[in-house]
Length: 560
Image 1: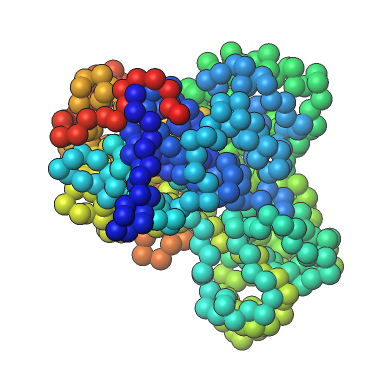
Image 2: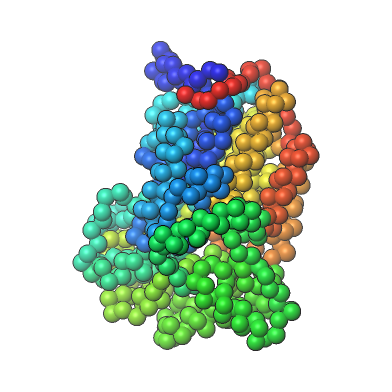
């Protein structure tokens, strides 16, 4: 085979590299994708903007960051040795332990030699004559690659510059997804947290009591479930490792890619039995109430209201303060139609004397001033530190912030600004040989355990690339008809649920001007997996494979 061959252009002084495949990102998806394509004998390299592996778990190192998927299912399942070689210390570990796990995976698979760190891809342009991509980085490197595989993450493009005057603030501003590696001194400070989604909740419950004074700016209340997080010793670790074969067989085929699934039918239960089921799954201290309670709550308003009221009762009993209840307990959307956060002592945080809750739904943040945050009514909250838990441009942002151009110089950012479309979330018509993970119209982030979904998507991509090579072809692209059929199916499935009737980042509602579409496929992880399998087994009828002038760089052997 031919290895990656860097050269220097005498005129531009740019480093030029030739690859079979370039992988964007070195997180959960990127690491596994790199491993699989190397095993095929491709000359492949991953490019990562961070200074180490981990993706989400490198960038999101804010106080309180941790799993809300059980650790023993948030793992790779392709290797029993890899799975059993790592032992978790608790059911829902914190960010430092998760980051160490991904470093362990990287080193066990010897992936570092094929990753370029602290390197951001700035553009990727498709050359129709050659059937190849020209990719450039912020370091001046130019990569000529046949396949461009994006593993940039569903939630990796933070909404950072969201308020007028942020650059005038005389204190320090942090977005949770760009938290510095060094320790941030918060003790004795007046700290403001903007946002009470899943991330904001983790930050708030963690720093309360450790700062001088905490002010929380809350717009959209959240249904929350208390997390139960037992420690794991040798006995617990051995117990979950002994379940490897069971988990590998079941997790990929459940509705959400978790170990549990919906077992009860609302209509078959008496009111007393329904209450017993809800109480049982609630007491599990996990996402089980959301993902394995009653599936009808996603489709039937009456069921959804009953489950919603069950959670509201739990929250009201802990708050016992009408003002807090009004600001923190949702009433204008149903449980499960937004992301459901797990928490530990979060609601009780607002009962502290050194914590203020400021509702900004009817009195929004107008601007950031040198001394703090000003609301629409002119009230100014003086602060030393502002923490923005303001979310992401989900699904699309990781790619639209790169200058990606396909056939006829068409721009992905412009295309998606008009209508967000993909083929099974794995490719986009008009962008040949660009294969995608964690983008819209595939299960991702919403109602999906991410490692389950990302493993399946990268495996499908690897098989598709193998099929192209085995057939002696060099280009694969979804047909316009194939993409239209998938978009129509996605919309049909989504419209049968209550989720599209709400306003949240699930539909891009947090990004001004973003086309409204449910970003994640909601037909079920197991169903999606089966549809992807059927597509491949039938010879990829929604895709077209063709020839291009230039052959693959490498055909056999490991990468170097």
